[in-house]
Image (cartoon, rainbow over all chains, first blue to last red; front, side, top):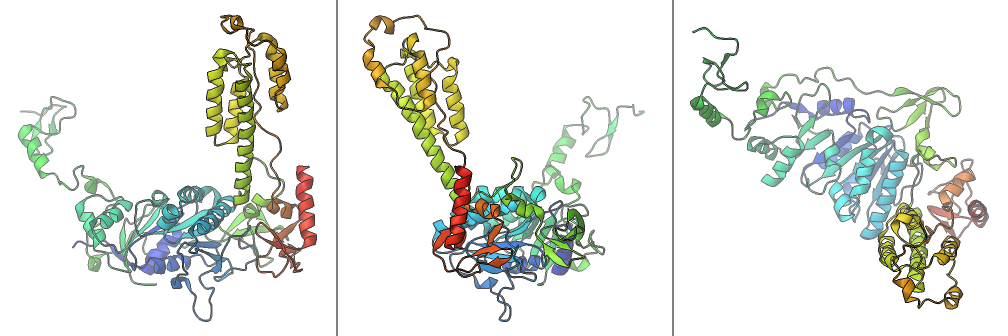
Length: 239
Length: 320
């Protein structure tokens, strides 16, 4: 197998942190199958957001333990909320290092979840200035039918300071995938999934699909096109 | 043989040849065919050779420093032009620009553009929060306006006062009103109905004044007038005379009231906010939660009777 230029996750995060800004590359797309390490990578990216306002949209019908904080700090990955109040973070009553992180969770009532998520996206679109984490963006855009709201929020990246981390297990029906200036392609199964990952990097051809298909869990092909880009690189290691 | 100014080397064999076309690349068909056979099937246009951003197919062990190594400038907090609300000093923005901090005051500050959508003095260019309740109220208002316009059109059609040529126009307008999805579209249709070019005109020219008044007043048509007139005049029905110039039957756009004030805007107007963490009344006044026992839900939280009455007065005062 041919290999890409390799680097460590810390070095890749340093590069991502230097270009991650509304005026630069505002949106990340993290693509990989279940168990590829998407949530772990999102947490690593949130390490670049210690003093930022963060809203995590977790649409799963049941609480995902991956977002539970350690025993001594249960709000380390955001305060779970059921609705987003105006001027989110104004009282610094959330979680995270500075009380600015919030996590909107789903419930088994999908209609109610869709309404709450739509209201949250409307608040983000109106207020701007937020790091929006869409954990499983396909669930939000397809099952909850919020593709337009997601697109509207992402369109405000430069003008209103909305930055996003989109996590997806599929490439179809994923709103905002074309707007992600930074792509992280992780472990996938099957040729169609590998082809989807290669296309997200702007690659074509069977050889490059094979490169994407060979990515192991917790490894990533990181691609961005900002000035000084090294092209897609293979990122290994954990934070 | 001496190469002329137009001669060029063949891209396959390198032999110099004199092209017969300005864009010729090969000296002949054999070279063109050979070059085609040698072209990569997975990269037929040669993008891998041209693009700088294609992956360098080297092993991880031999990988040298990346172009963004060893120097990667981290993004730091940066100074903005926004003044601190307390000391007036310029605020500092977080590295991603989502929050603000004041150095002298050593406090985190809400960016002005975050709280701006809730300010009372909104202008048309400013973003504002549209809640589900706002969307529901807008849908109700649209349905009400459609009902008014459809009733007007139905009454016009049933009254028999429309010219024969205007009846299908009125039917078409009714379909458009039913399918309208925005108030703007209703405004357009109302304007169209009033436009003489649309062709909605009365059966008799002396009906003109009454029709227009009926439409603008948004009232039921006075059928008494119909009973007093002779509408069995077949001669008039078959009259080729198009009638008076530009007779109009106005259809109102169904507007009756200004947009209502919301609970959120009423809270802002009173200088209050809601704290989801407070027990009882969740109104925050000067940073202090009311906390009084309550059973008055509003959008976004609970308030006590006193605050509820004040908010309701604000809302009704705006809409009165």
